[in-house]
Image (cartoon, rainbow, N blue to C red; front, side, top):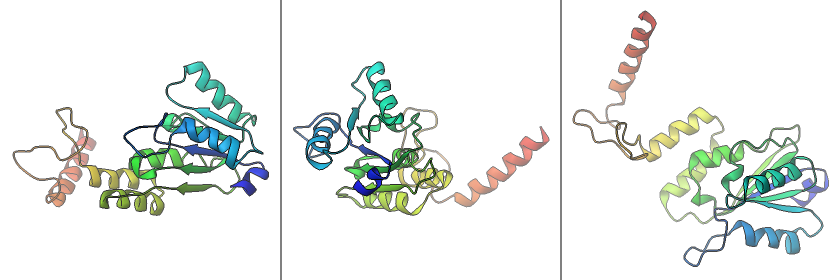
Length: 197
């Protein structure tokens, strides 16, 4: 990371929390921005952005990073969308097991926008089979549509007519897991019907 920064690259360090938690043993953006600045990378300029900052403060931090006034931006998931810094070619995600598959994919999309080789480092301690599968998936699959399909398989459809955003819906007839062939045929039939209308 240091070598890339010396060559003009920029790095995001993403944390799951804004502040330190008494209940969770996770790294937080505020504490680790100071650690990055004072202990790990004292020779580089480190900034901070998180969701508890005002819009003006967030915009200013991102502007400084974009314009090269900062080399490292410690952040929460506020950088997940809407941040375009082509010079940013490194992303470090701490406690990566705490992020969803779509979040990880969106975060990964913040780097690799320029000409330089980009790097994604995922650090964490996945304690469940689901966490391991999620991290393996983000390492193996780069296509956004396939990521969405895998996320759907892992989390389920949710409730189409209700408020649950994950899990399998309660259907009176059919099953999304075992009736995949019927769903495929229905999709083809629906496409044909849409072409006729």
